[in-house]
Length: 491
Image (cartoon, rainbow, N blue to C red; front, top):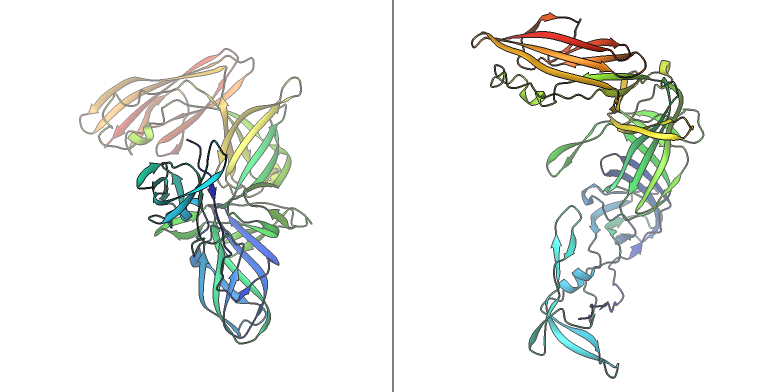
């Protein structure tokens, strides 16, 4: 059967509004990194005195209707908002057909012999669409259309569909509507503001490691994604850094802390200012952010940032975090055997001016590259950093060393005092198959109980926290070292 083509016989939409605003004269965007933006715009409209209705067209399809605010900049005390509404019942094939369920519609068919068109009338029984939920609603095609034609039920009836009228209430684009009480007639500049979803920003970084593996060139990028359905042309752009609490579906959620850096004297780029308990970052030139567009703007560029390559062996499986300080496991010797042989390769950078950085770094993915022997840049790994204030460390796990091997085993486990104390012996071996000396930082985790002590050890360990100890081992080429530590737990 042929596919159904739909013809919409649309009559003009009758607007109850007496006034329409002009297009945006100015627009300001303040974007947060959790699918949210504050939008402020100015529009011009000529108002009559009395109670009137004003329609504002071409607004985002994702407005939070409870956040809309309007004020006349021309005469704030002479224009009062009595009612306001956000209208978003847009024309859609599913909505049109839904409004004609149980009603008569027409099907235009073609005689295969004469090629002449003929009209067949029928009653629509099912549209073939199902409405689904979600924050913005929508429809899903779930089957074929069903209609009763000439006393019989047809599934997926042939022909293109013709509807007699466009149902009331459907509009072409989302719009705002106000009922205003105007005391002073004339041309007014209206400022409206609202929160809208489905517009977001995030950070990403590109770092190129030097040949000596002691410095990096770092570039940071802001990526803005606009899925509001609206263009924002010649817009002033600001980004907020801070933990803002917002209410959504009766739950507290937070807008993630973000931070940017820019030269305070730059004529272009991003400028930082303090705002309340947050940071406000302003793009110094206006920009266009179109609907369904992803735009990138440079955040920072730093050359010769000091870095340090680290080798880290943390042999105990991360499962220990689930067993940590659990009374059910503290005297079970069968737990704590899981281990790995991988030695992690990290790049450590201190986010300070001394290291030629010193920017508040937003959360984001960092991709690291390095030139090979042919001076071609190759990708060597990536990691995600959390929001990192100035003078804090950034540690990037790029991968695992090919020529370094670790091994961790539980050599012995015994009960010292039944029901009160146990003791276990951990052996950690490290092998260096590289051609140069290396330094490996080793971590071990006394996870069984809060109270523990090192009974014996052939290395000097440092307490990192209640469940972590650390030591550093130097290895020559092809050297193997064995670390032995005996841990005693008491409860």
